[in-house]
Image 1 (cartoon, rainbow, N blue to C red):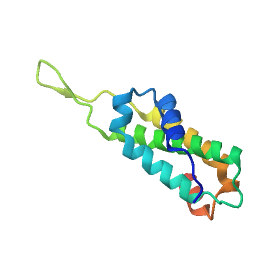
Image 2 (spheres, rainbow, N blue to C red):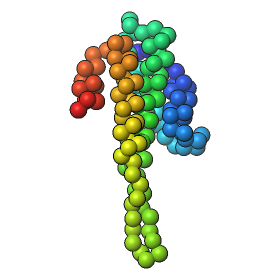
Image 3 (tube, rainbow, N blue to C red):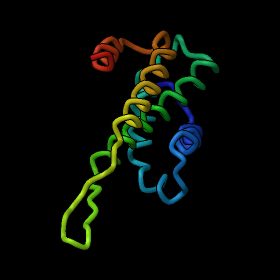
Image 4 (cartoon, rainbow, N blue to C red):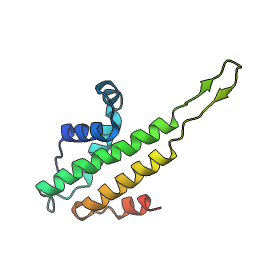
Amino acid sequence: MVRISFENVVSQFTQLSGCGVDEVNGNISIIENAWRRIGALLDENKSCANSIASAEYAAAAYAFYDYVCAQHAKEKVICTLGGKASADVDYKSREESARLLRDSALEVIKPFMLGCDFLFRGVNG
């Protein structure tokens, strides 16, 4: 497994998400999952300093997409004084942007990855 820096992934996730320290710490499992997933898919024989930096960014983008999806899945219900409940949070455009970012970051590291055709078929539809 190629070693990518967890600290760099966290730093880049923080920049992408705009999360504060507490929110980053609350989502550390999402970040760690993306870090492990991308690190495990890199080919040691094809990796170099540039590919590792790109992989760290791809892991951060992957974590950001998972984070946006998790935020979307949380209940965002607002109760009015009249007793009506309303969920008026639209994450669709943010989720689409995060997906496109993740997909483009994965495309950059595709030449450095091990047998990942299944991953790209899943990403593309």
